[in-house]
Image 1: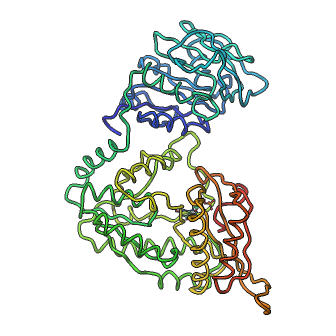
Image 2: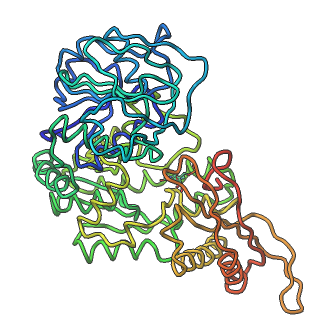
Length: 515
Ligand code: XMP
């Protein structure tokens, strides 16, 4: 975000770095994550009001430990060093850091040594529960620093140089286990740096709506709508900024949930007057999937066919120069951060490759936002809850929830079962508590009995999971009465199914989807 007061977080590879950024934004200050070895020139360009050094898995005592240029300190910016960040500051400013044999991990109690603006109104009494995760420890603070807190295990759990506005803490204020962690972050932002809480979703929408028309000029922009929250927000936001110059395309691949495609398209055209074209391509997708059983094959075929249909449509729009996409901040950080892009476990389906092929520039208005911020933008734009809180749905749709070949008949069975799962989760209030809940159709038949007759029919598996970011997940402990109701309804109402099973695997080692 240009022109907005920001805090830059230098990432040394901590698993909590994203959380630091989120906590700062929740406090109303815009923050960005950058790699620890960013150049001074780039840092000056970014013009942050303060820096945060994250934690990290390395030891500052090792030879090739992640380092920063000394010049960072001559920028005279306020700095908050967390864990590895603190040890690095201690070492670079000529304090003493020593490696310890055991990593201190988990809860610890912080004991106040000296009053500090960082801890204003933080201690209820003299002790505070904090979350530690470190190996090294600071033995001697650098010249000009004072110890402000200790624990039973370490003499320097926090230190400050008030004159230079450098504050360091050994524990993690960004995690929920640290009591008053958000207050510590707020004290740094507001009392120490002097920032104001100006980052909110109304200001975000305003800045995008002002900026985009200048970028686009008189060209047209094309945007694929999936019915998911990200592409919906991109479309409604850009519609607000450039109106009919935005051309949205919804490709119905025949792999959607019951009535989903038409419902989404009608809603968006009726309520937001979107310039939206609905393309019915079910037959094409299904014909290409005929006889295909391998999951990766299915994904690839669906991805390729989507691009083909989308491209054909996009080419028919005159003067298209941009492709709008719902890339989010975690995708951006993945590619720039310490760890680099993570390995591809399943090939995800998007319009990759299209921008180069059609010579389109990308517009990614959400690339600075976390998912929870996108939901807030959606509400700000008047997008209703049923779209905002919809469960994630994979690009290849029901094709990867039908194990084995995808046929019209199997799709029809799965759609009916899936609808029952959704309805029952909604009626019982569980829909909004879980990350995702859906039905999977298995490629096997089992024996049952209905009335006096023997049956030989399909099995439906229920997959209902709790998760925060889909990277890890656990199966939801649904009440047994609710499971019984879903199972009864599916077996009674969906012809062709005589057995329902509940998937009790976590991710990892399983994944959320079955294919
Ligand atoms: P897995 O199965 O990898 O899924 O544990 C993690 C999350 O990603 C969703 N998912 C997809 N989303 N295109 C998407 O847009 C895809 O190809 C795709 N595959 C999985 C899945 O529903 C879950 O929320």
